[in-house]
Length: 379
Image (tube, rainbow, N blue to C red; front, side, top):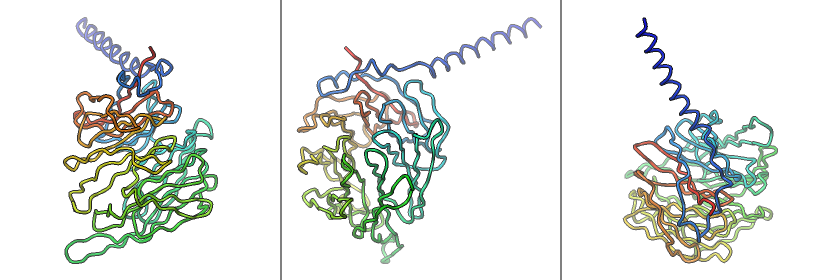
């Protein structure tokens, strides 16, 4: 009997230690006030602040503008993660979604399903109190690569294309019909305007800071999985007049834009590579002058993912299937330093917080996704 009591006591003690450790981890605060804004002068002092393991092979995410929460998308859906405490909320969306996008004020978050059939565009509004309001739009056809939100989160833009199954006897694919850009008023969740584009797939889209222009690029569809990069180009749509100006000298696909709208990066599929999907060099472009500032080489068919500091002075670039992060001057691409993501098989999705204090990078470790949070401690 005494032995049983001792075993129970030991078991309870071990359980208490484990529970205390779990609670300590969940409640251990990260002091964001103790971090300095990341600049080209101090970025070589980056330290790993914390890392969150995601119970999924992959992760997509966006950081809220106040730098306090991460919208995390994994194989189960979308949930919010508190950076300071590590606490995770219930899944707000329990479907397979992608492209998490915050409005600049953090009041609105969007995500969407993807596929050749009908899709859903989810709009999550955080301004209504403790419980976010979740609405959705049914989208016919293929949704474009991204959703754009204007600065105050009152309007969004997305694109959708029709898809018709075709075959020429050698391959089966889809003919992409006209793409339509939808401008949606979020107060009513209805179209405010629509703009038809040529028979092409539209890539990422971004509003100008004042919300009057929408930048995007498109590519003609050549085959089952082959956008024609040579036919891609930057388009700037005036959402008030519907007029579009083309910049044919930027002949790649728009992939991402800095928070202040000053820089963007462009890449594209090489149509000569067929199904290998080799990428052309990535061009970092000054959006004010619409000129290339520097390029990142496409060695061995590898692609790049790029993140910009909020002040557009630093570029963080990660080559696909690699774990080394290249940190560069935005002005000319000069490499400042490199960052190795420890124990990672691959790193991806570099994102800065809008206050510039945090740099988030996803990685794959032992088959599971991680979100790594870096910062520069105050001197």
